[in-house]
Image (cartoon, rainbow, N blue to C red; front, side, top):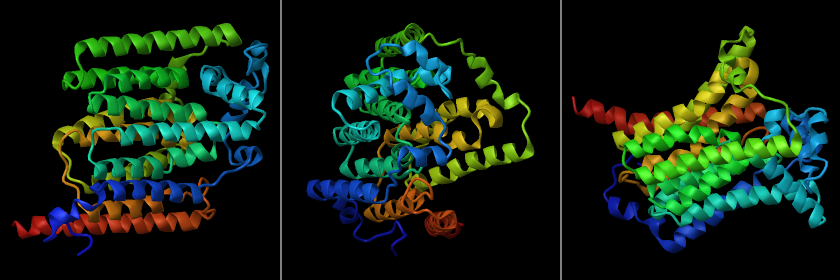
Length: 392
């Protein structure tokens, strides 16, 4: 049976995707499907879809030569914490200005660079080819990662931060120090959220994945990068003070029942979209490390609450934790080809978001989610429920 783990040719069933030729053909197919089903809107469509952050990022991009940047803070819609993500947007503006291309094309080009970082780091990791495919499929087809980044392509800071976290995770799991440090530098340039990686690295040290020297170096790099970014933001843009405490305690602010319902529903949706990865039998240790990491990354948007973060943002901010999927493969995982085919199909359906992909029907997307969830439930019943019953 297709959905069953039991297979008389189990060894052969686990080897097809590990073949070098098949592996690269699959990567090409994954990227091809992603691109042809991705929605690439213009700036006006991004605005109309409710992505108001684009106003801030496009204004910051005008400061391509780092001159007259202090006027940016007075532009309509620009906030201080957006200005702290100045580097990716100034870079987009610099490329647009110096290579005579539109700012839209500049952002999309850099989004492909961000995607390229994830693909290349995955290929060069120490995982088996089958594991690499699973990582790429989940990272690319999760609707609130690169689907979102390529739609709201001005959110380059989010994309680069995600790729940076992915580099950090691969570096930790595969003990590639250069990749870990490169990820931290890129993350510090992308978003001030880099500070959230400190407890994750302490956690990795506690499990002896990194040495104390690397932990200390990483923490010093994060703190110095964070403070340097604050200084340069203030120096270049003369930004007003910003209260992190106000955001971190937003969950205690009064909100309407409708706002809270929408906020909580998006958190539940994130959990549902995360479930397909658990068709594989991970070790207790790897699941614990990954879920703690997800909780740590999700803490900031959840604490922001329905008022300051809102239901429209909580899913995409929690999705930064998807970059730490490699933690699940710390220990040996038995992977069957049938599982790869199944998770590819489920995630491909889940990725066809009614805003971010070429599918523009919300009802159709809800049907696809229902169908993929039904497949997932059927898989778990066939492979775990029946097994439990037969053991009684």
